[in-house]
Length: 499
Image 1 (cartoon, rainbow, N blue to C red):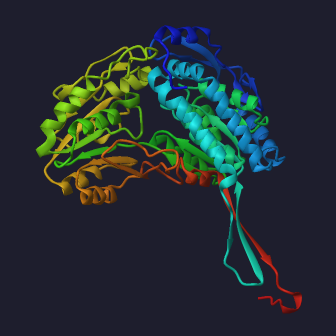
Image 2 (image 1 turned 180 degrees about the horizontal axis):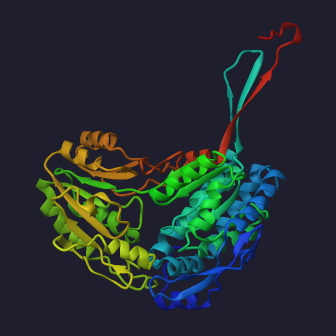
Image 3 (image 1 turned 90 degrees about the horizontal axis):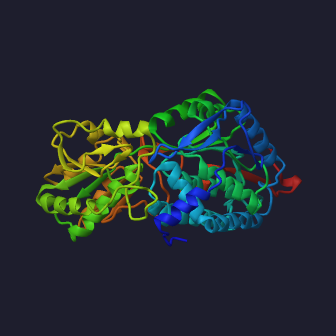
């Protein structure tokens, strides 16, 4: 599935695609009730790909009604766990079977390189859905300690109808991160893909019905945040929302929940993630490769990107020589050319935002050029620790470099941010590695590597990077289930006492 094709073969697939354009509600594609549409464009070319149904509150109400019916009649929530597993495994196989189509669709819609879509996003999507499917009949409930006259069972139940609000940076993979555990738990879901990237979510919904998922269980509503996201957040018959995106939008979902039915809200938001390199780090060439991958993978449009390099003075020059050399090996260009590692930013608006971080007088070690939606991998060196590119999440291929004298200074600077999603530390000293990993306030800390763990490890953040639950791992199922205690009194009536 990860075998790359030629540029010409990918372009032929692109030319032959039939792109979905309706909302997917109750098992079928439908126009928006209002009849309105919006254009989805290829950010690398500006070409219009499709006119997509522009949903609004009417469509949300209709989809929630259908999802609630599906949940209450038990067509998915109450079938045998093994049956749910088989459906999700079939879905994973269908995604795998359509891997090239989905990879091209993702690249066209988002500007992501076909290299990443084909070798990372699609395979990880398949793996995620398979992993949660296999977990369905392997999570056991509990019996708590009680007296001989009682049995206390602690059982999990699906939370109900769930709103899943996706970001635009990993459309397919974030869909899997959310529908995997939500469907495994037995929930019915309303998916709101990002306005910029709707195509693969719609196609996967179609494949899910082909795999045997009952109508009404998985619904996909394209549209803007104000027209679809807010009605989902405020809906009185949605039991929980799982959101991945900006911190500003996450704040709004908390408000929507407070002002409606106090639905559960799980937030995975921004990051300004440090990569700390101490002067005893070994194999600087390998360290540099990890830093470049962490900073520029997916054009830096990654909430866990290593956007701040905090390097101890004694190793800085040798490290930066290698970092610049590795960054030069990341070619930028046509996303459908598998040679390229850097594609287009997702939209003109986001391109303009990233470019706003470039100012005259900055010390540019590499890059700094931008044109027509493409931004070169850029490395900026800062003495001012309050400079805007150092403090704010850029969400583009920009690495800010900061120099420190000591280990303690490095850790303090790593924590000097409102975010706490991810971090990495590079050192040959085991004690420093573990002390640093413990001291850095982030949900994931990697040692001598960049990464996020894998599907088996929980992913989420501290501080303004999010709270309320975790994606990935067994812990992801906690978002989509409720705990219930069932207390059974076994005592004889004659011995029973009433308090």
